Image (cartoon, rainbow, N blue to C red):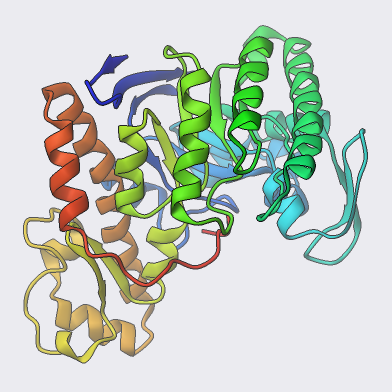
Length: 376
């Protein structure tokens, strides 16, 4: 790792399908697709790694079917690394009538209500069958707000499940093992975040995620959760903040020593006609763009900015033409991925702190983002 004076890091994560330069933003491909984007377009905007989701792919079309068809990479025609979320967040946010036991979680899935079970070993087996390059340990994501007692009990269960995930991983043939990341929990309680991080490091994982953030808590509490975990995670292992966030949040997380990010905002807001720029967001539905001949952002090299005006994109959005949401999605992902790439270069050049100040101070926040979801 190359580390700046402020704690931001530039590194390389090696997977069986190639290297990932960090800091990195990962587009969310929940159901074997990043919404509105083709695999070739993802490569053009610079995506090094994308996400799939264990829960969603398990209930439809099923990991066994995907395995029979050659695995998730072949299924969706993507030859670069894939990280799969364990499904824990979706089980606790989408599933109906769930029953949590030591074994795992019994629930009715959100599609047809049929009885479904996911536990630590099940989650790991699904991720193996999908062909994941980076698998996440199965965890319980406590709600916000959450008392210390509730969060502590939940954390104890997550740590027991983490040990089972690691034991399952160790039982697999070496050439069939993906990288596996443990997930720190503990809600907004600093002592629990520390305990979680220390326990996961003792178990030993290839990387460490900070989970249970951006679930409705104030931004200051989110930063506090990150700050409470990061000092107790090894400096030579990658750190991943799950489900984050707005552009300034990503820069602030990088400044705090986080390396990997994913978020549905670039594609979700694109479908509502919102474009990200270095100065804030543009709501293309606003009348002020009706006669605007300029690109979404001056100097942007994405396909949308190189070919089309704000006026044209506004027309497409207002007319509910599919091309509009596709072009804004291309721009937004180009912006997010490029932002992480810029941060990396500034870290290597020793100018990250200046870049951080200028970007965060110059960015005008938009309305609060929608609730966290993995359905990019």
